[in-house]
Image 1 (cartoon, rainbow, N blue to C red):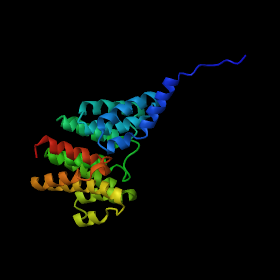
Image 2: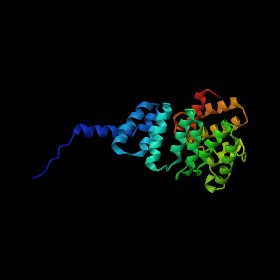
Image 3: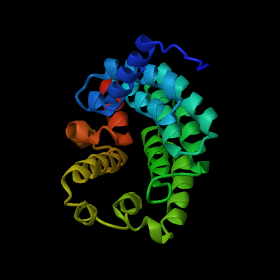
Image 4: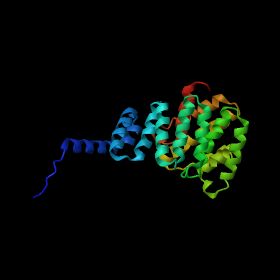
Length: 246
């Protein structure tokens, strides 16, 4: 006797539909359908338990300015992955900054230094966020500490790419022109790097109290559209512009 197990076709078809939609979650984000992307990500994660789906959802939540949800979700990811990537600490820090909890933002950006996986310059991003905070809050002690960390990191050969050169620029070791010349000519990646560059240039202008130019650079930073949605500086630039405290 052959045992026939009935198949719930409605359930199966629903799963297929959700899986097909998930393939387009990032496309939904790129096309500014953030609420739909968030919902689809939830549906798909319930089926697959794939952490990368939650990573996408964080970006959708940032776009929706649901900062408390960003923090909660990032903490979930950090717990599930044992904090292996600095991205989750960075994005959570941005959300804390948006909620005017500056000390917690700095705490998370500092914790990000201990993550196993960082950016391709070996961890310059978390230091740039701390540099920004020190300048914004006029915290000379933090600034001195961050500069020391940057100098140590930049001795590593892997930090000689564009991303590492951002640190060299903040330390006044290269000029703005030299930083610009390191930006790739590859179209999509170029816009992502220009997004980063504009934010870093803005930090230096903020440091010299040139608030008008700082605001201009933040505006430039978010001007590249969907190609820059993966860049963390994009979201902090939006937060700063929305806070209206420039």
